[in-house]
Amino acid sequence: MENVLAVLNLGDLAQAFSKMGMFPVFDLAYYIVSILYLKYEPGSVEVSRRSPVASWLCAMLYCFGSYILADIMLGSSPVDYFQYNSHILLASAVWYLIFYCPLNLFYKCVAFLPVKLVLVALKEVVRTRKIAAGVHHAHHAYHHGYFIMVIVGYVKGSGVALISNFEQLLRGVWRPETNEVLNMSFPTKASLYGAILFTLQEAHWLPVSKSTLILVFTLFMATTKVVMTARHSHGSPFSLIESWTCHLLFGSPLGGGEEDNHHPPAGAAPSSPVKTKEELSEGARKRKAKKAE
Image 1 (cartoon, rainbow, N blue to C red):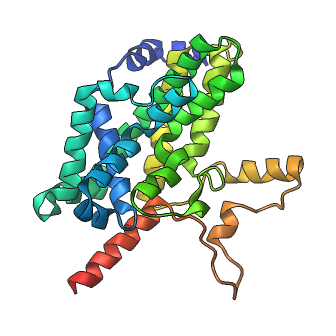
Image 2 (cartoon, one colour):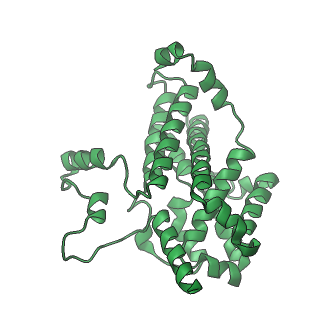
Image 3 (cartoon, rainbow, N blue to C red):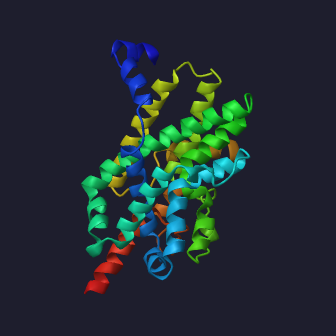
């Protein structure tokens, strides 16, 4: 990999990209997309009208849930990240504009597909950095704790997904079937695989520099997520490999998992254990259209 980058003269690019600051542009995109997904959740708009404090807390969990959970796991204070006033104020401003902007103008702008695709790509840049930072932080605390490195990196990259049931309780909703561990979405799976790669690199078992791995993994995540968002795809590029691996190691039936959810047998009621954010978005838009009629 390093030789290929040297030939293409991309080594310096990878180094510069890995040192690029995330605040405010990339973090702003991360907050916008995260809170946009919160607004897609059923009942979130009603909660914002009935209890702005609960809505704000949910928004903060969507933006900073990964930091809170990772700090708890590493023995730090769960409110440690809230010392960064600029980040909290920026996320709070985004929350207010998405939920309370007159005529929903801000929401309509950021939900416009071309704009949303750019924001989604920028969000994946932040996700990759968070995975790498989580692994690096765990490496300093537990030098040979490779499983801990993977877990912390995974938690940092997954965001609010792993504590989504707790976030739902703040909105007065209890849906245990939406547990992300039971029904892992593409970003959650990719965060796990990314955490494994960054742990291998941190342990010097992967002959690639960290800056190169950050660049390559970011390109993969951003490209995949943009394509999936543009096509309104709810599957996962890992499905085929996972299906064969689970069949060989655990005896799971081939074609199980996500593919079955998207192609139910004829005459059978479709089982939809978990709706993706895009599906929730479409449902919300249809409900709004009906109310307008």
